[in-house]
Length: 288
Picture 1: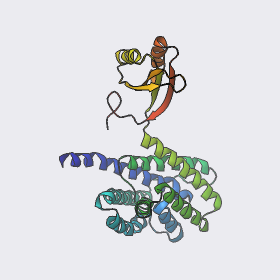
Picture 2 (picture 1 turned 90 degrees about the vertical axis):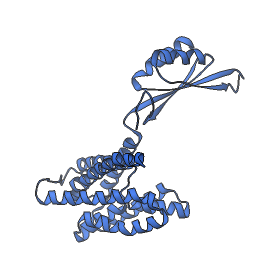
Picture 3 (picture 1 turned 120 degrees about the horizontal axis):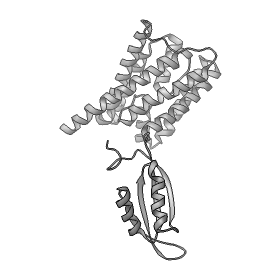
Picture 4 (picture 1 turned 135 degrees about the vertical axis):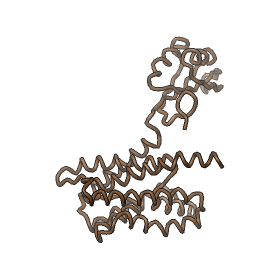
């Protein structure tokens, strides 16, 4: 119980930080330039454009029926973080609305350079959502619908969310010019890449798979010189039938050349496969 409470105290403030960044991106870049967003937030933005409803209120109101449905179908554990994330988002949206009314924040509005607005909107929204998702939260909306449909029908969550986004962004053609919709698609793409970047981790390591007949010697040298963990797997060449070993080792980018040098100095004929690795957890890298 104490460990769970400690984990909540660490993650909930970070979820709040993510929703604050997301709320800033919506009010600073999206709304003043009449761009769009997907999901339930996109519906709230449409209501803001059409009826001038505050984003903070409509976002929360639209999510309440989904919370009730999700609570019944998905259970308390899965829906709790969604409720917290959505309420937190509404609070920060309301705060942004007040700061803008007071003139303390002046939104970025342009009439000729939408590319700049789109780029920063995509990065800001993606950063905010990436932080929220990374620490187990959501902002409700399409995520809840996707989870329910996935559980009841077995449909892919990614396909459901994409379909909903296409429908919502497409319906915005009623209120905003088609070029704004096209700009929105660019912002959504950038945001999705940013979310992946935050989710996978900014630290990119390299994984080495080394096929050699001198596995023990190479592994010992890597451990001795680089202080890195190494795993050995037995292998056999399908064509030659010769017994070999596969060495698996993860190193930082700055250590790539050093590891290559060690392997080549012991076995010049070793076959080396190097792949990208993201978000490395464990001894010698980082803990979460």
